[in-house]
Image (tube, rainbow, N blue to C red; front, side, top):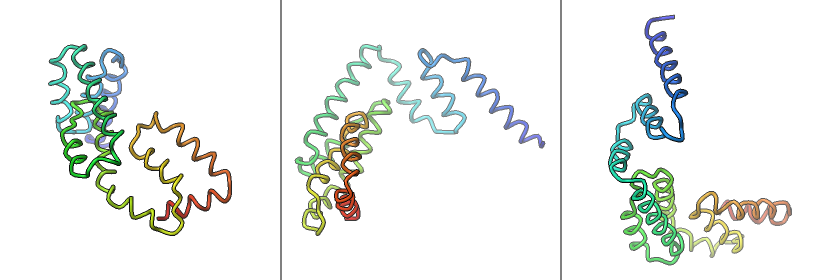
Length: 172
């Protein structure tokens, strides 16, 4: 084994030992920071984490709750808001170091980019309005909120006729 391979292997072992010694309940920020160091990620997440660490846990919880309320408000109005307003509000919504909120905002931004093409689908042959409504909700809701919708779609797909119409709809 060459020296570089041995060094690399030893660094990996040291990293794993270091992580296994940490308690994820109390040292989650340190675990993420160690992972980012190993992966060589630039400290954007660390900057937001260090900014967040200057706040008390109560302030962080209040900020998170406020962001979740804003996010839920956007989801409720997502399909009816004018597109410019939607983009403006999404751009203004900052996850402030909360990975799940940042991920949800990024997902909504991606769906918002394609929102103008959705109404044109209703004019296509093979359009399934029921599935379309469900799909729109699945695209903007969180995974936890869509679990029931996904199960409903899966049970609906047991019917051969519905499977064919859903396949045509997905091709659109």
